[in-house]
Length: 191
Image (cartoon, rainbow, N blue to C red; front, side, top):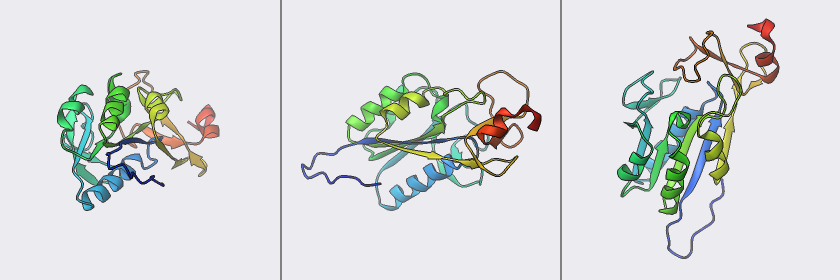
């Protein structure tokens, strides 16, 4: 990613969004970027929704068990209170946050912060998920990652739910979801 040099001395922020299906490596990529930022001695605050306790109550943990410390929060406005004096804000599982998240990310970017957000772009029904479409529209940089379809081996961008439940939010991993390509996702005979 090319970042234009800022010759005015004024700190400029931006929003990066990492999106894709379950098991595409979104959290892994978020952790990778945040570890590089820490290595560069930049001040970082990392957040996740309080409801996401799948692997750990405090840490952001990828399916590959890479982890980085984070602060669980229950409302996006808390980001504004907790991100003072930092250079970079990381946010995982953005689809679970409230409707204020896109504006909060905008405010942080206008304050000169680099905001890195990761989340599912679609829910298990194939519809845009939570605030992700709005974050994608506001993003300066977008990275769409793909998993591998468990049925045919092609690239997968759908999160197929293996358990019959209509609630949009159901936390889980391979016990509940599997990545599927467009064809296998829509082919009900491959269930």
